[in-house]
Length: 302
Image 1 (tube, rainbow, N blue to C red):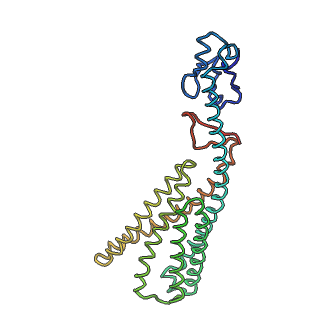
Image 2 (cartoon, one colour):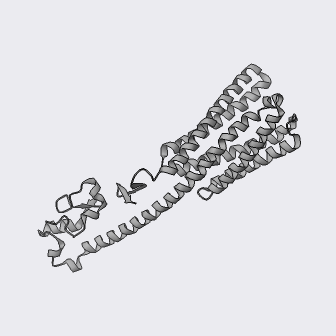
């Protein structure tokens, strides 16, 4: 007896992965529901549709052909989407990896441009400022490059450029000398700009990872929340430092430690994000797309 009533080739069917014996030997179910063709053949007591006198005018077979055509179009669409995802993954893996390597010297520059370093060694402080400006500018360029994948990267890049311009302005105007108190009027708006930039970058990373690594996507969203929390603690510490100095100092120390941890986690997540996109298609000959057909896992051979 044939595997199917209608002559469908079971060897080419995706449902073979769930050990379907074929409708003639099995339940006669297709695409998650009762198959009219199989039911008709069983009712007439025939082995295949070829033995049916009404085959040429059979509406059941005509509907089946339409289903096959729709499925073929869906398969072609998923193949095209797979190719697009593969190209994007290579692109994202490369440029997000560059972001990671730009953060490393940026962290070193952050240590050198510390206010205490200015008192200890104005030269090292100046070097830190220069490295920070170069890394920020390069970071903004990479974010603009990534904007083809998500528009939020462009917004983040603009914010980084604004921050870089502020750093250049302060460096040219004051160099390694003591800066006046009125520079806070510039620093506060720039801080807001940086927050907007970080918000867009974090959410762009999270969005691109959805459907590929949802756990890592959630970590980017959570990291943003922790980032805002510690910045809020830092702002509260500055306020309390005016009225209750001991408590304000404690808050500032806690926020500094928290922001340091956030910076380290951000570095780790950048590395892991780049790694996910670099190797997403490298481990298996079969690609598992984030789509489902008729509530069953859909597989596309490379």
